[in-house]
Image (cartoon, rainbow, N blue to C red; front, side):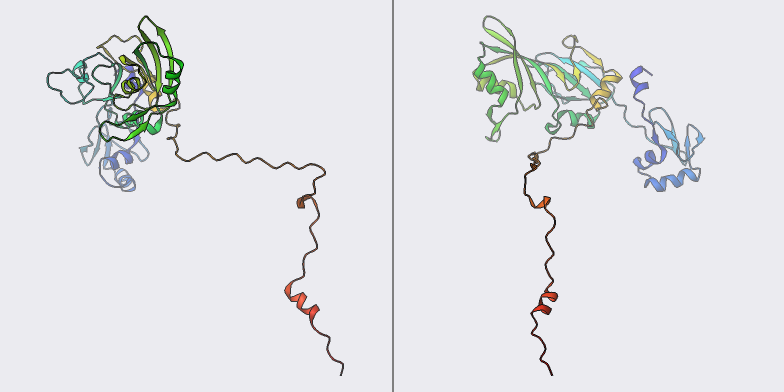
Length: 306
């Protein structure tokens, strides 16, 4: 067992494992344990005991529970000309052709054919969803090479958001605000550093074309907390246990709530009163009004004398 596997072992209560395997509710599975029908590594299990199906053999009436697929996390530096797809693409090489994985992996944060840089390959569907769904506001950082020298107006427009036309639906959509700055200016081209929280298909290239800044090269440097670093093009590495924890949110990712569409309320400004104020709250309560019954008694005519 390597360090990543040992640090990511997750034990669950036996009744939860049995329920997840389809043997009934957790309460019903607790009864199986009490009845002595459940064993862990050959030993009769006790109520409250935990196990890890990737390391332990858990049986119910002698039948072992199926072990879940081992979670794998790989960082890859995708070169130009490689397709970031899990499916074969004819004669074109895919990102999965570059890694000798024993389990089925899926690319997280796809890059187009001519783009380069960091791609996460994993079979952790929950993590993949959180890293790619726009409501979680996960940042992606890029080095972008554009033709020419962008002026302040072009950079400001990119930062604010640019209206693009969806090529499939024809819908006009404004991109989210982004962080954009010059990194290196050369004779006829400029390197930009761009940080975005969304990743529509060809978005960076379409923004550049709209602003008159044709994009010549895109390199992704970061996905959330995961960095490309000095990983050579076409090479891959396994993530460390700390990198996986950071991506999963133990460094704050899970605590981050999805972006709310509800407009923020304006803060209520408390009313201040001076010493000379004559507000009703500073005066004694007025004499209570007489009830309707008391008023009617006063209005009654005096009884005639007999």
